[in-house]
Length: 459
Image 1 (cartoon, rainbow, N blue to C red):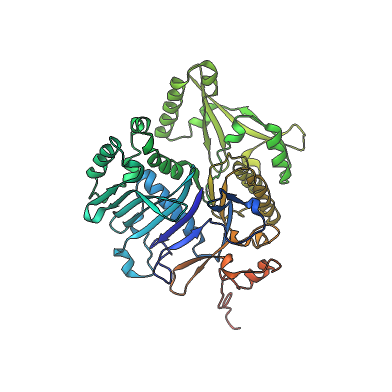
Image 2 (tube, rainbow, N blue to C red):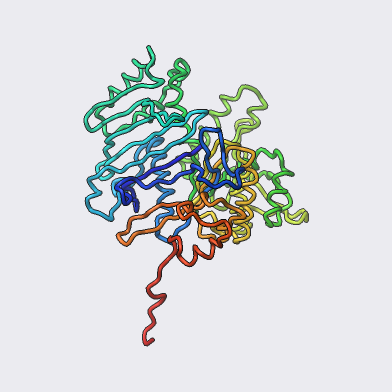
């Protein structure tokens, strides 16, 4: 689970008034009500939900992009366009390191992982992985001062045999500003983790970033509809879909021509799909597994499941029935709001362990539907360890009947162009306060300030 995230010198985030990084936290505050909204292991209390508010161009989406940038850099390397991502509010930032640090709970322990990188040059300056203890002590697992070619290994890595192996990898890249040790330690190292269980934290941290931190943007589908592809719990899923007022009462997997689907793919993509299907078929140990082999292809308005049967590609799609009238509709025929609901169901049906981040949650949703979704999520989250962080303009969520004070965050932009992140918890707002009205009046910042709406000639 996510504990904290810090960022400095990235897009609109420079440094706060104390010169430190901007911080977003899922650590529960002093609020005593709605304890079911939190995870509590007696050592730490973590929120399961947070809503981030702010005016357009305030930096809300930049917080999402910062998390995504950190994740993608570890998993895939520095993303395209990285050299211009530093905070341009001050020209000095071009030569200064950008700072990314994330604290997470893995199993029963807590860890901090981070790195500094001069984005204009694409050069990493430092990297660290630290175990955080309940008594506020730190145990260094590894730390790298890349600029000076120095590193330290410790903690669970400081055992005979394992230390020597990790040391070899660390020594190879001790002054290599293009490589992160966490990335290197998750490239073809399967045997290492099988033979040295104490090294598992290196793999666990990497896999949490890769698989458990699920980041979603408004112009991309949230879900692959994998929850529908299995055709299990159809009645439960249909009841949930119907509860959001979509009119959908049933759905079915329908065979479609694979040629029509595959032929629209670029040749390279078509070959990758075929190779992937063949590989999955070869890895299947029995006939039942071979029958279930499939690749989900999803775009904004299309959904297909590609499989193989007797060396031929098969294809299915989902079609929906409304009001039990036996007439089926394709995904492309559903409204934008219905498609958005179908996407969001992935989160409600998800197993525990994931941290979802959604930019512009309320896109295409009626305000009442947005409220209903968050209300449903919080009810389900009370029974499992899952987190949801959203950016939104929907002021109806600012309701103490729905949310805790510490679940509300704001991003506001200074006159100089940098963004500040802060929590409603800082305002110590009374529980009978109409915070939606106070927010829209600008009491907490994070709302647009207009000089004039439209300058009209002659007026």
